[in-house]
Amino acid sequence: MKQKIIFLDIDGTFTEPGSNVPPATACEAVRKARQAGHLVFLCTGRSYGMMSGLLTYGFDGVVASAGAYILAGEKVIYDCPLTEKQKNSAMQVLKENGIFRTLECRDGAYTDEGVREFLLKCTKNGGGSELLRWREQIEKSMNIHPMSEYRNQAAYKMVVMSPSAEALIKSQESLKDDFYICIQDSGNRDYVNGEVMNRKINKGIAVEYVCNYFHIPLEDSVGFGDSMNDKEMLEKTGLGICMENGCESLKAVADDVCPSVVEDGIWKAFQKHHLI
Image (cartoon, rainbow, N blue to C red; front, side, top):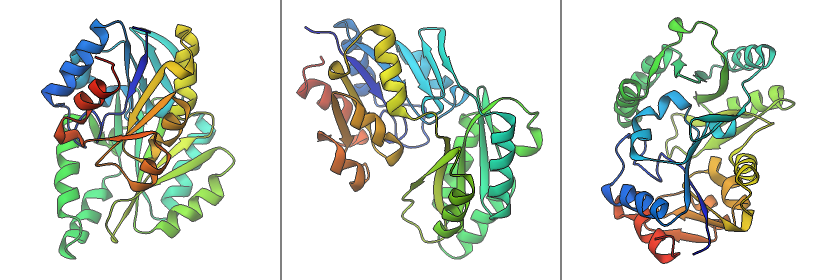
């Protein structure tokens, strides 16, 4: 069997969003694929510190912070934090536009304290209760701290929550030289989620970097994702697969769509494409 390298997004792909506990079938698929000689990488927007609970399941490496920090085994093979100027500029512009920021560092993340109050306000309007519960859960499980505890550690990217798409678009115009903002469809009119990322990196660039490092042709790479920050990864890999629970825009660029994360999608796709 020809060796493949497999890249797995986490939230909505390897696990349910915000969870550190993948389905048993997904873990078994990864184990069997590695046993067959394939390499399996987590490829996520999460910072390295936000995925620590998943590393015990066994992987050959990690693409963290959407490509800004890459490990092959325990060796750091790429490290591209934001410059101080980039970070300070983005933080200021987002604040001026009323956008709540979560700053992602290597060993954890730091979030604006006002997010909870904003979501409580949305809850009163019937909009934010589910997301509020989700945020409370992930803050406990993913090493996310209040912004007041931030001590100027190197940062890699930002996750943002905006009262409107217009505020994000306005921020993008101000930051366009150094950043692009990937807007996620939250399905809610009370807020818009997004990721503010360094133009130097994305998951597709990371895939190419890792494949070159291991001397594996891109045509022998496989990517799994569910949201628009996975777009470049699915376009770059030889085979790009979107989860059934993924967004329609990503399905449009994927080579295949597999069952959802809660319907053993990883296991079934690994079987279908002869990875196990």
